[in-house]
Amino acid sequence: MSRPSLAVLLMAAGLVGSACQQSEPALDVIVRGGQVIDGIGQPARRADVGISGDRITTIGDLAATRAGLVIDATGLVVAPGFIDVQGQSGTTLLADGNGESHLRQGITSEIIGEGGSPAFWTAETADTDALTPFGVSVDWTGFTGYFERLRQRGITINLGTFVPATMVRRTIIGLDNRAPTPDELQRMSAMVDQAMRDGAFGLSSALIYVPGSFAKTDELVALAKVASKYQGIYISHIRGESFNLFNAMDEAIGIGREASLPVVIFHLKVGAKANWGRMSEALAKIDAANAAGVAVSATMYPYTAGGTGLAATLPLWVQEGGREKMLARLNDPKTRARARQEIETKLDGWENLLNAATFDGIQIASVPKEFDQSVLGKRITQIAAERKRDPWEVYFQLLIDSGGRIGALYHMMSEADVTTGLQSHRVTIGTDSSALRAEGALAQGSPHPRSYGTFPRILGKYVREDKALGLPDAIRRMTAAAAQQIGIRDRGTIAKGAYADLVVFNPATVTDNATYEKPHQYPAASSMSSSTACRCSIPRASPARVPAARSTVRQNGHDRAAPRCDRDGCRRDGDCPRLV
View 1: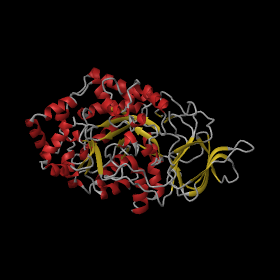
View 2: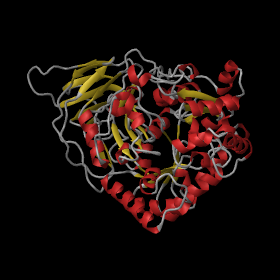
View 3: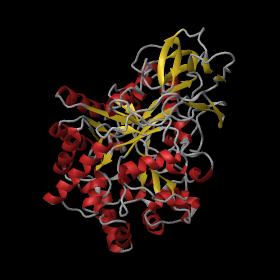
């Protein structure tokens, strides 16, 4: 279940319900008086937007037209709902279908599946640890079962998924560092084929994480060729984003060339201070690939820190075989000495995150519930100073004592490189985060502020304050360009016949509040509200049928009824990728 049609994030906007006195209104909803930015890069224009069911039906002067609900957007921008091309909300939406920290940013559609996706979990690969804190059990089977589970749960945003090469490998091969046999590769290809027919948007890879890091290029090409048959894309967390960035980009571009499909680079960045200033080189490589006939683009988030598990800083051989084997190795002093030596000296062949960020740049973001919570939000150097111990000793002990279940932020990029990257017309926006909530079970830990602030930060800092981007172009990256990049039809634009995924905001005040120190803060606005019309699953291809649902308007955290949708939703077609 989802609510894709009208998702409106209102910053100081008035919601006015027009009662039906004498006759049925001509439209379900009118967004009146706003400055419409259509998503394709055109300047703002004053217009009303009329909605019937789940579609935009009229754009223009609707002053004489009645509707079941009128949203006063005078002085505000009306834009297409934002598309998060790299979300991580596959589990958190099962815990809280509201998706508050994403919805309040204006996100109406999200694609998951970088390194994992609950849509492809099996009994052996399911991440039960991620669900246990929320009291959710894995009570579904396969792609269709997962999305049906979401429908039953009820969620506020559209959700789609890639098929992760990491999960394909783990399902067929396990956690071993070896190439697949011909039979195994055939089974892996069949798994991708089924996923694409079920509705995946393409093949993803996460090549710094075990076991995805064990995949060689030829294996990825073979799987990407399957996705290519269904007009899917290849989207990758490439093998290196610091010391090995350019070789890693070459591999991704080569996979696109060999498999004949578009390439998207997840969260493009230039990590490690020694490499700062080279973003322009990365963008030039992307431009050169496009000039040579390979469609290459990228996503970014507007922050100078990344975020992932602390165990990802270990050499790959330490991580091989899973958590238990990793911990057994870490408990051996000789193994720790060898790992330290490689981290300090070896830069080629793997993503050396610790060397790139240094202990002073690694900030603890999450720990198990039973673990020492005092380390949250602190850098490893700070923890070491407080304990009067060597940072290396603290680093290894944190991993051992937590069972390797520590999340961290990595402060390793420059603001200048972030700005340069965001200015490229080939870059869209992805939060690389889960939808959270500022209270309750989802407010635990000290997560990356991108969970709460990615899109407002683009609009507030990079558009209004820094003037690094123009507003119509920034909106284009968040909407139409993202839809085109992923392959989503009829979303990302304000046009007659398009789905009525909309966001309304005040460009003079929109601001992200979440910080590295206090991340659980929603964007600034005293009356941030959302309105959702019909719910449906949405594919990249043509529309079809799912039951319409009761629409709601959410203002200041409260729901109220809005006009009932009178149209069916969109296709659950086996041959077309879909959102739910």
